[in-house]
Image (cartoon, rainbow, N blue to C red; front, side, top):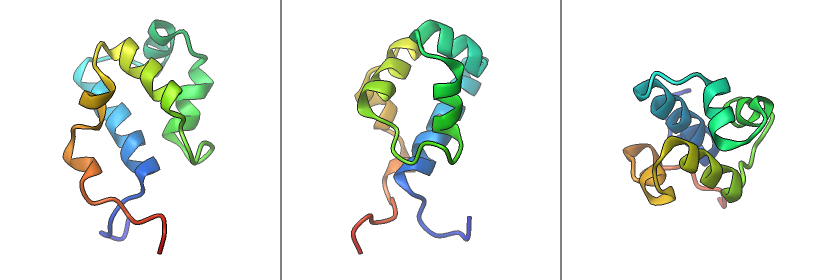
Length: 85
């Protein structure tokens, strides 16, 4: 990163990693709890998926035992790079 605003995609990726880290949970364990293939979550963490869907994020939240609102209630999402310039 060049110190500028991050994209929503980057913020989602970081948030997933932080939440897993707080729970000492591997991506594969999260995938099992969410009923999602690990590859789906890994694609949300890297460049493959530029637009993680709301349904996928909701499944992650269910697996993490948090609400979608809690997921996005983080300073990471305060100063996102504008999509429309």
